[in-house]
Amino acid sequence: MIFVAIMGVIFLADYLIKGQVEKDFNKQDKRLVAKDKIVLRKLYNKGIAFGWFKGKESITIVGTAMVMGAAISTFVALLFKSGKGLTKLGYAMIIGGGFNNLYERCMKGYVTDYFSFNVKCDKIKRIVFNISDMFIIIGSLIVLLSKIFGNKNK
Image 1 (cartoon, rainbow, N blue to C red):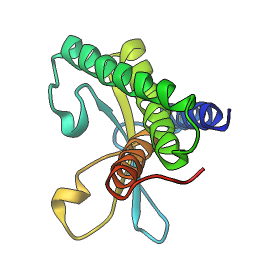
Image 2 (cartoon, one colour):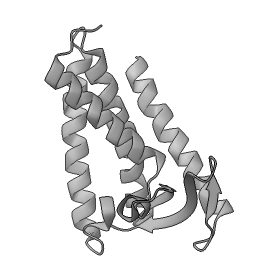
Image 3 (spheres, rainbow, N blue to C red):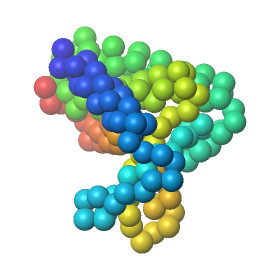
Image 4 (cartoon, rainbow, N blue to C red):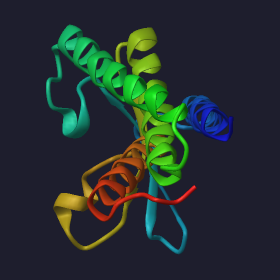
């Protein structure tokens, strides 16, 4: 099934990128790319988004696992229904990215984030992401929009 393959590709892509970041960056490195619009760096996030729950690893692991369980349950139920392609795509993105972050959190005790946007707004500039985060955000928006506007596509 294409949606399961999408999950696997997202997981594997970010797994490989994080490995490269580990190898090529130290914690002080900052490199500007994409016409100085993106900053590459290495940051270990021991909490969840924005560093929330830092120092409470068991809460972050259990909470993330529960959210992933709910997403997987919903996704599996959707797989056996026709249509709802956008919703399935959104959940595949959420699960691929979420599982990658959960895996790393369980194996290392943190999630490696490695890029931020070089913009004028300091609040946005300080947020450091990884590719899994982007897929979680985009997948969540796809699911939300497909729920709001209906999802009759195949």
